[in-house]
Length: 79
Image (cartoon, rainbow, N blue to C red; front, top):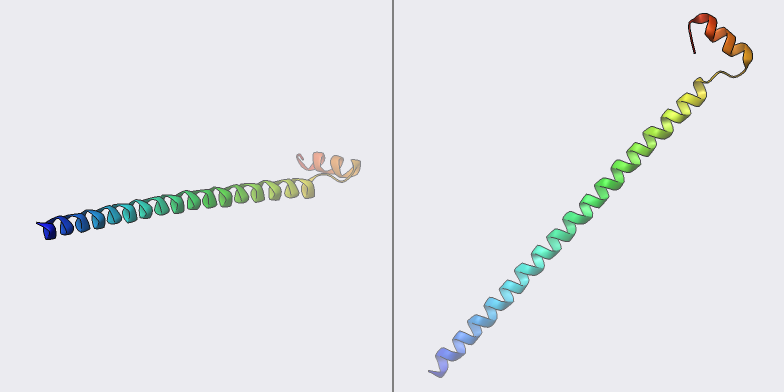
């Protein structure tokens, strides 16, 4: 009788430990997924910012420099 109670308690404790370990694994996996999602969002935002800056620089480089340049471009068919 005593042996049965002890084995039952040991099995219950092991089961509780296994559930705790499984819960911790789920928690850590979710944290990794959340962090990966945040990293992907940061990378996407950096890519968009880089494209925006490139477009601004291209527009600045293609802009007419002075009045003569504007007139020349207008005569050639547009800015």
